[in-house]
Length: 94
Image (cartoon, rainbow, N blue to C red; front, side):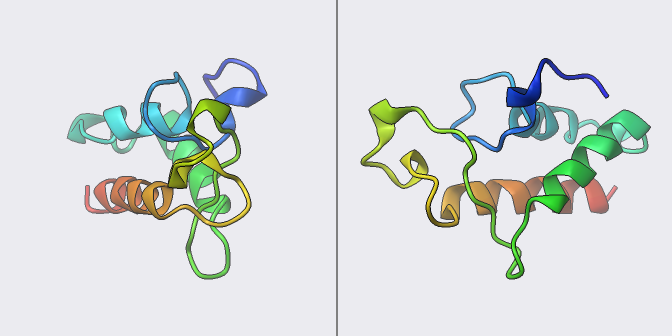
């Protein structure tokens, strides 16, 4: 697995960091990569973070954005959930 420390695996939006979500969003757009075991491993990590209803909760935030929907970690994030499911569907429709 290619990553840099544990922060790489934390779910975050928007895409300003080098992290799991950002890498998956970019690499999932290349059809020739969709069978790569490293990419599939990253996808499984993402999928394992969904709650019972398939929603995703932010695991890291930047407090400058605390008043925005993506600036809190207490409830599932609509933006993160949408982004995660777009990635998952893109990968599964390979």
